[in-house]
Amino acid sequence: MALLPKEAERFDGLSLLYWTVMGPHGINRAIERLEFCDCKKGLGVKIIGGYREQTREEFGIFIKRVLPGGLAAQDGRLRTGDLILEVNNMSLGGVTNERAVDILRSASASNHMSLMVARDDESRREFIELMNKYGSHSSFKGSSGRVSPTQLSTG
Image 1 (cartoon, rainbow, N blue to C red):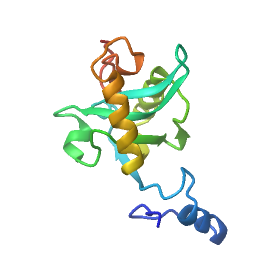
Image 2 (cartoon, rainbow, N blue to C red):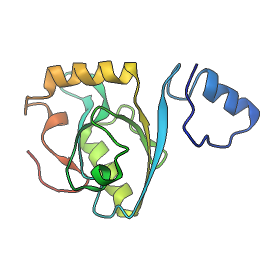
Image 3 (cartoon, rainbow, N blue to C red):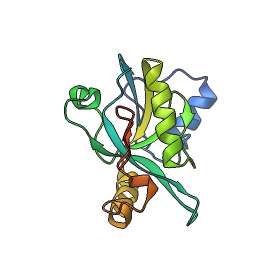
């Protein structure tokens, strides 16, 4: 059975049935919507993943690291390995790592960020595969050390 976010969004009956049976992000995804305010300085996370044009590999956008002292660390809800599906209702499916960083920075600049994240067996498997393949290699642009969205530095 699919899990609903703690505060389920309001849909008409048909959409709600689709959400619980099929889910907009796949079958039986455990997803949660997280809202952040006062985030002009960013969340304080590093991300990894995204579409790689060179190899045509596509990974989701994952939280690689929650930085100590950042908003995400203080809040405590985002965790390493969380798959970010949407930022302010904008899908991150199929985007490059650089585009995901830009989307997170833009959302941060608005001072309100709504993230839809998956934290389930499927996303854990993909995160482990991604980290095993690229987690310690700087040649993968999706793990270049870019911090999103709190710092502008690159690895």
